[in-house]
Image (cartoon, rainbow, N blue to C red; front, side, top):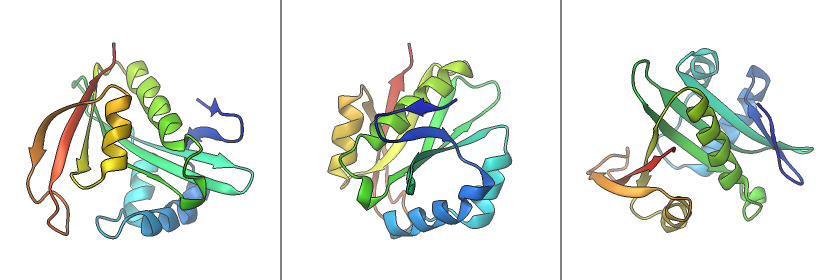
Length: 154
């Protein structure tokens, strides 16, 4: 599945994207980094999807989702957008691709956790129809708390 935007596309990530995925991971997050080994595993897993937003210059953003067999909930594990791509609708396009893929897998809901201090991400999720349903204390490696969000994929 490839989703096109005026100046970038969304597609499943490939092994050839590994270096760029790792670089984005390091630049976007100060803790809780996915490793090279974890990305390789997720790229090959039947229960994970790694999405890449790309343009002519390379990787703009990524999203990682997990699916459990026999469960109607997909989990957005990680999403990040490169600094140079902010404001271009990359996160929104990645989320739309994740939602479409989850529906195709038969998922009825999409869940995620977000740092309580990430006001930009929280605003985006709420604009896109996610609803807060809980919290996790000391969820992140640095001890930060998270809000839990869910969206029904009707």
